[in-house]
Length: 157
Image 1 (cartoon, rainbow, N blue to C red):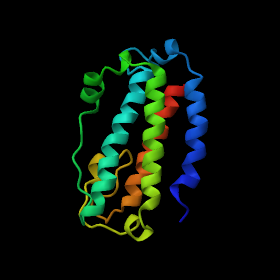
Image 2 (tube, rainbow, N blue to C red):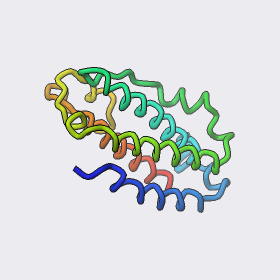
Image 3 (cartoon, helix red, strand yellow):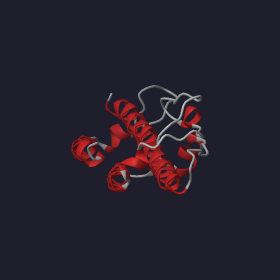
């Protein structure tokens, strides 16, 4: 399997350029009334990076893939992403994800692809894994990136 950096480093570099082209005014807008602003969506992706980073690292020390969920709306609200600068959010999001990619690239493939009978990826993933089948860390990692791309589409729409 190719390293995740081969797939995602170019993606992050081009996405970063597109995000940096967005004005502060545009970043403060939401696509629909009552929905998160673009800043809040990117903040949510930072929260997702933080939570999934813990999951990815923690999975190296257990035989299962059991993780706690988090209240996404509450996390976004208490961190006041609307009051952050767009530039600081973009910088943090890019740097954090580059580190995550670096870390994932260091995980041996046999650990990434090891089937784990006990998991709750059917509860925490963007695209839930079947509850009655083994799951892999690789599935969780790929789901993380799918979730990210889903939200980036909202930012750019």
